[in-house]
Image 1 (spheres, chains in turn cyan, orange):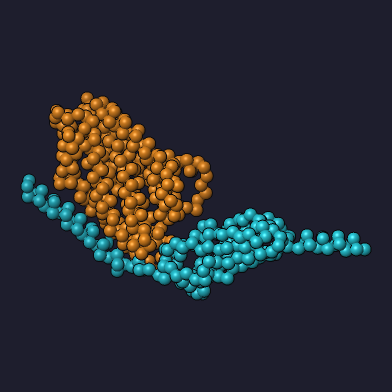
Image 2: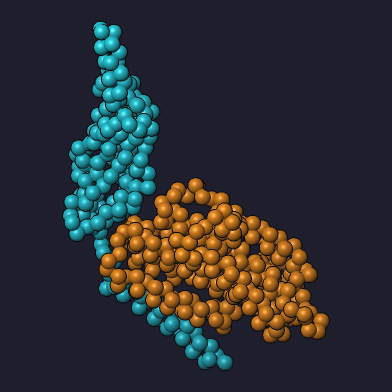
Length: 171
Length: 257
């Protein structure tokens, strides 16, 4: 009976999800302007006594303003990173280069899940989000473009006309 | 020395008595229209603004190169048709110097087109910190492509008895090279399209600028796209300069082309 219980306990343990990792960002917030590139750094730690599975970390960005839509692909083309198993107490630094493509208020967060072991989850951990405040830059406007749009052809046209007039005078 | 004399004379013919100023004026009207219609769209976000800079630069390089090709395609056949080649051949100037001088004069039109492009790129790219990168890229890639096509235009011009034929052939070749760059991005593109794009000096040059400006690649990552413009310069340059004695000549009677 004791042997059976021991076997059942071992089976139960092996069926449990692998140890989860902790994940944190290096900063609580960031303030940038549209077009700026920043690198968010997250630290994945295995606080458990057993090694983790191989892990997959994924970055996501959400808009806090319902009027501003976010396509995270625009912010970073490399939002998923695969990590080797972490030994107990080991940690891994994961960098996320992102580019702010639209002005507004956003939260960026990372989700870490076991990779390649379907059925052994769900053990998903999420960072506390980094709040990213993106300031707009000078807006492109017809008013700003008008001096160049008008001046260039006018100047060149006057130059060409003056040259023709001068040539006609010479002939 | 004689190259400089030919280039100076050709430059005077082009800029003072010729149509270079009118061509550059028309070029600026085109860029003004593109810039204005881009600037009035207040809904552009950062990425779309980057694409607008890229689009304007591609048009500037494409049309700047076209103007350069048209000028170079007139180089020898135009002289032949106007009856001035005979006088030029009587001067103590090497045929190679004639070719080089005409090449330099044609490239002056590209450089003028590039100078005209600067304020437009500044207006469109200032808000997204792309001005310097776009201009350096446009100058580098545009000069490579313009040099290659100007040499090609001189070769065609030297082979054609008729100036119309020279201009038509050069224009058709440029259109054929430029058309693939304007295909919608959503079309399926396999390895064959990639090969076609890479052997096409215009398409590959413009793809290189697109990858740096819009996709954000580093300058060195896609340098292989610049192989075909460089190969065109080497091949067309070797033919134009190496065979200049046979190319820069009067045709007896009417040529078949």
